[in-house]
Length: 395
Image (cartoon, rainbow, N blue to C red):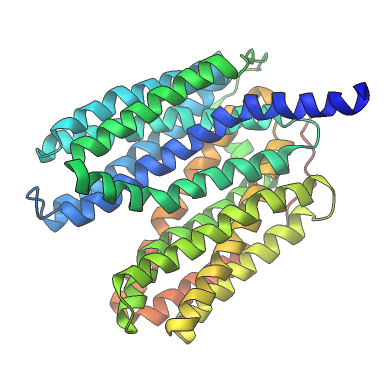
């Protein structure tokens, strides 16, 4: 009885330690997508032009692109926990600026501040998950972490719209402030402090060499391609649904089908990976090809039924590729530079998130939407070609 109880207690302790980190991942996804959806719906009520709306939507991601690698490296220097707690508290404080969101300038400041704060706690959370997952558990840990972020993508727009309807942007920003502050306290109380590990000094040339290594750029390409497809699908699925006789609710439902597929697939795929039943190369290749097939289906035969079938395929493909890409990075990176690696990989995801919709929109503007989606399908399929090296960290 004692032996059987020990693993049970260990599982409870593990859940207690990692759950706050999963919550931190949820905060950044929920914060980004709830406000983005609200901005689009309320832009006319707060006097935003289309150009101003585009700028406000981009501010969060612009901050992340520039700051994630910086804060990732900083978490290696001081340890990930202080960066996570500090970033969450900063997110909570800067969200309070949104209480004056009727003023576009204050809204821009709040959006930029949230993006900068998320740039701190997002890569630090990924780095801490990776360090806690040492010992063959990276797949399961990142499967759950990615699943919670996908949950933020699902309910962010819906819950954000509900909060705005009930109390305007002030209520939404206030709720985000409370959520981030509560998560910071939870991390502070439940997550152990991991000391920074001794590191050698790195030059710019060392950084360039490490970024060019296959063990970094191939899994990062996987993450960028899957996130690019996610960003494009979230934007264009509702538009396709409307074009083919469905209402706005059906478009939102298609996005929810995609996100639900990702939420359910990621923990399952992570467990299969840790059990040795799915190899990283085969899993990421299958995931990316499934995404490409779903996008190609949207391009070739958009209709009421195929839109939902394609959404499910894209969601499951993202759910397969994402935890395997992150787990491969975690197993291939020395712990002393885990933060910098995760920050740089998150930068790759942000570039994919921006590049996917831009590719589809740009090609569609010159030709038609099916050609834009076809171009995205080809790019995602091409990303499945490079082979992942064995996930063994360098000496």
